[in-house]
Length: 315
Picture 1 (tube, rainbow, N blue to C red):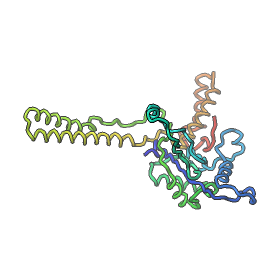
Picture 2 (picture 1 turned 120 degrees about the vertical axis):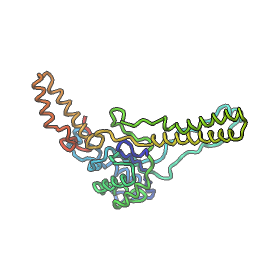
Picture 3 (picture 1 turned 180 degrees about the vertical axis):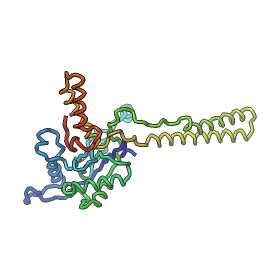
Picture 4 (picture 1 turned 45 degrees about the vertical axis):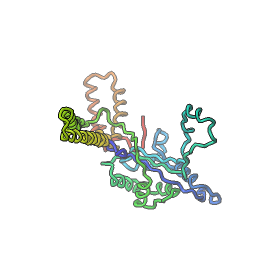
């Protein structure tokens, strides 16, 4: 289930953009394309507060209103990049003589797409988990989503139509980015002896049948050998299925890898750095007392408060 891993759902969506014209909201006398109008909306959409100056402005990303969203991004794809001509074998080209005038097939998009990607906390990778997050997002930023999706094919006007649009346009996330595990996760080892046992027993039956047929040339030994050969094929297929099934299972969630835990960790990282600088040169008693004050003031075990606000990027 590539869309889900480590307690996170990785959403990738490609939404077709409308290709007709629309009145420019800045001047009713002008007509522009929907893709141009969409870019205007996205440019005006506030991003995360990434500097002290933007924190003072205070216009945070609307996604920061949701306490489960780690990352989210909109971008417009006009077309796919051309990666060059297809590879040709120079020996075959030389033997075939002058190459006729041909053109390589070039992939083109039928219309622009709005790419919407997000990484959010989820209990599992089920459609219900995705629908729950989408409804939560719609509840806190419906005006922004209406402005954006009004320029897309399949406009969303309420939570239900928003969920329907996103699920119809979703594509599988085949390479999620999740780096919250500080070490190896506690994965149970694959029992190789148990997985390979059926194929091993079948191989033994095959060898016995082969030896018996070579010594006795009896029809029964040949049948035993064929049964063993069929058992090897079935046993190897069973082993392959078990390995692929185990490999497809998502990693367990890392400790403190949900958004409240990550925000608390960032907050403590900054505060402890300042604490280490401020307590340089203090004796043991003073350092012990200062660390007690640090624990009392910053409450490392409490992810609710004090903590770093969502949508704020601080060094």
